Length: 117
Image (cartoon, rainbow, N blue to C red; front, side):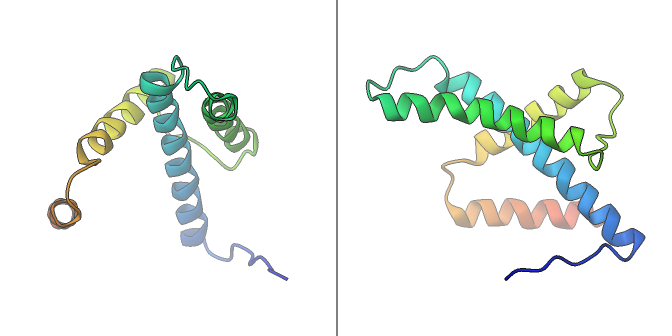
C-alpha cells in the first residue's frame, strides 16, 4: 500500500505549488491543442469521437479541481495572461514535436545553460 509523505519544509511546499502550476499550464495547453485540431474532427468511430471530446472536458476538470483545492495559486495578474502564457508554451511544444530527439536534447541543454546565467 502506498503512503503519502507530509510536506515538511517551505521549499517542499514551493516545489509542490510549482508542480501544480505546471500541471495547470499543461492542462490549458492540452485544451489549446484539442481546440486547434481535435474538437471539430469526426473520426467516424464512436469510441474515438467520445475520447476526443473527453480530452477537452477532462483538462477543464483538472484545472478546476486544482484551483478549487486551494493549493494552486496561479501567480498571474489575470486569466488573459494565463491564457497567453499557456499559448506561448504550447507554441514551443508544437515546434518541438516531431523534431529528432537529439535536437530536442540540445535545445533543452542550451535553455538550461541560458537559464543558469
